[in-house]
Length: 470
Image 1: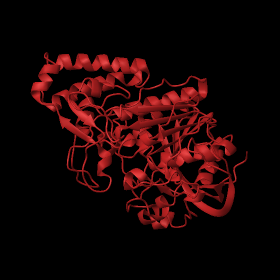
Image 2: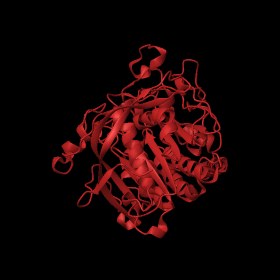
Image 3: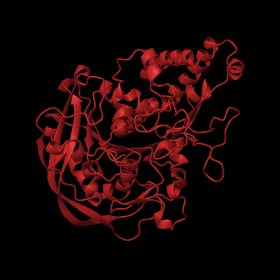
Image 4: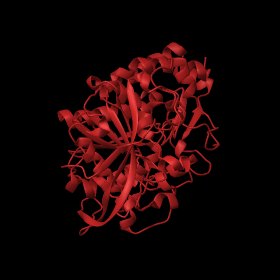
């Protein structure tokens, strides 16, 4: 299908909305920014949109738009994998953020994937997210002042049109490269929008080859682009306000990855999403919606850090650029590594027809607001991994206090020396032996990639020393 978009590259290098300290050019990547002008339509439901996700939508009104895309791709065509990862940029903080680029970029770069971030929602351009932030027009009025977003009801079609443009032979967005697979990804609010897209839009437009829904909240996003969370306001609501499951007859593979925070604090456990022929749900024990890898280390991690530098960036902190929290936030890098495995498994599912492994669900207590825990207070169930099965700190996606987004950052609690001595009587050597055994099992189970093994072990050794348990 030909693209209806009028695409033009911005002059000059893209400014850094969220600064990073690693060098994309040195990693063999080029970065470019484009604007796209076109006409988008909104959607309306036809008949019932059921709680199991099944429904049908049709185009409704239409409106002109001008939005922008940020593209990162291999500089050398021979290094391009053929996979394009298209991120629905996250606007919850009032800024066009790219949390899945931050979690996944190391793996994208080593694979040779292209990444495209789409300003799909209005708040990233004009402001008005869940919290005030630096939207594009505030950041640089001269560069972005002409952008025009008609509202989030039109975001679904805008996202589809970008996907179609990427599928064109020799797409100008990709510098003339040809895409073999186009995967849609989104984290948090963006994942909730993509869930609606999968259920109501994808069956008719058929643009993307697979979807990665990361950290989906228990939020119902309507076709008008509005959302409501019963869990966040803790008020009972009619059934129509509850988030729908991803439909069992999804056209293409859909992989959902959730942290402890997503299941409880953000309420996606209420969705009760089953696995299916085209749907997999992974729930990660010990993980928070956001952690020190996302908030700190990812800004510097281009693969050039030594293990000591990396481990220090992952240390638990209470002072963040955006706020101060009451307890040290979740400090393990396991979500970064498991997310990389999730993307790899999704790409294999799409390209080779090999589905990802099924994963155990986190073991919720009856009210769905907490988990059954072991003697150390670590959640049971979910994807087991060395940071929870061979702990030197107690990690949780729950328990953080503070204003705004603070409850999403989870906690890290110190392991007292007596408990550490009981668990690892031989000290560092025993700890690393237990960590390695769990890591190798997690790799065998398919939830961490073998390519990350050496780095993980080196960082684990440094982290043990920083914890000062010996």
